[in-house]
Image (cartoon, rainbow, N blue to C red; front, side):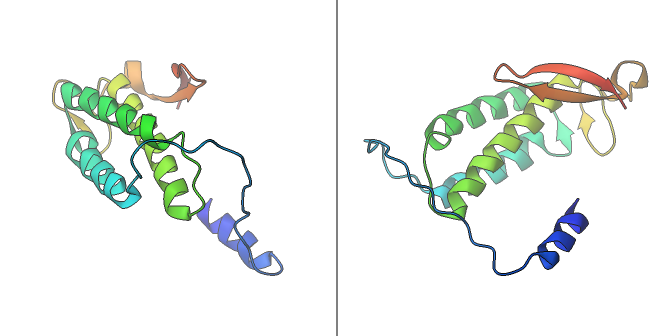
Length: 141
């Protein structure tokens, strides 16, 4: 996908510019958001709780923290890439953490302490999350 995107980028004529969004949004009374701080905290959380070795309670804690951060970040309108990137990182972090909590086995480099064995009978499939409720569907691998 990255290779294809790079090829398309080189084929495009002219410079690519990030479009400016114009919207009328009421000023938020919340404290100004430090995107670098939230990004750093998210990175540490993902490594500590959703890294190579995974434990159910740590995955649950990560989900709670990501949801907490999302309440303060996802409703913001940013005019700089750092804000958009943070919103996307929170979304991806949420999807990874949610999927990891659903998968009760060890697979690849990801090791679940409570489920150390590979379980192809139940888990040799992809987890698809869709919609606001993010109900999981499973697709054969």
